Image (cartoon, rainbow, N blue to C red; front, side, top):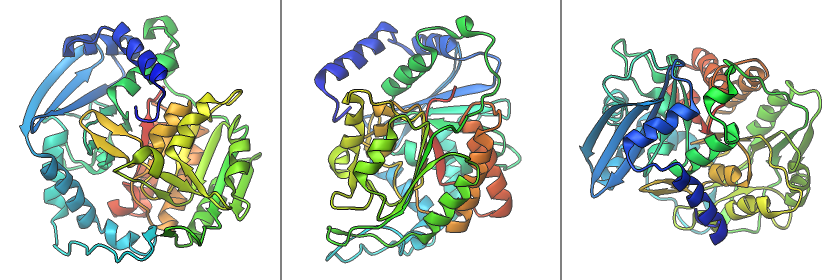
Length: 410
């Protein structure tokens, strides 16, 4: 909750307390007010304390399983790093990511890791053995770095298929955010009061905003490589839109973008992003053009304080590290994705690493197509279909596992 005024923090905590969540049973009861019980929905809540990771599986109205693991923070982060190494993420992004000027790059771990073994280990820790194909949608409420792990490539099934093959996924930044967002979407009503519950939803693109490969600043502490693939990606996405506003190159200035951000139904950023773990609110930013090129997490959060500001319903962050933030015992704080949620957006599609241009353009083109069709668990279901299309064309998980839905599906 860093960066939020004290009165907003107090209000958020009061809303949370009104739900009287004092036990796992209370949370299971609350879920029965948030979701239908016959839709194949699973919720996993992670909590970390004193070197113990607690993993609790819920269905709406039911506590299914609780398990604890003895694991250090360092061990959990090391698993994530080894996964990225086994996927060759660091090799792929070495000439695409922002670099601090005058500072030699950190030497990369050249150890060869077995991808299958790491996926098996992470699956054992993150998903219960009872997780089956009956679950069609998974909601993750993370702690530490769990929210930045690509769940799509976990393998909980006996036939060794991936999670993405059978189940859509969304990540809530924190438990408080989850309760707030779900209450906001239902507007104080229960699922029973809003029945008939829509099995699927579609998104109408009336006023989308696209930001494509700005003219990156040359006089900052960072060197930002050009991203010509971002232009191809946006051009591919725009093909699904009849009316839109596009800012690219030197025209992608912060003032201009903020002017058109309010009232946009979708905002799509294909640019560099920087995530800072030490000061995520002030030093995490999207890179634009012009004299003030950084759009920081704090600035995004504070948009909600502006008179007449209306946040986009959906934000797509196709930029390196946009999903990363300050990993904490209770979730992720300060990430660019969470900042857009705090500013009023409901749905964020984020990237965990900067992936191949052709694969990303293809994936996001399919996503833009699917969100305009009726899909279950919107927008997570639409992203899952786009990922499956990409997985068929680009089989390596390096190319299809880096995007996730952040927020709360309808």
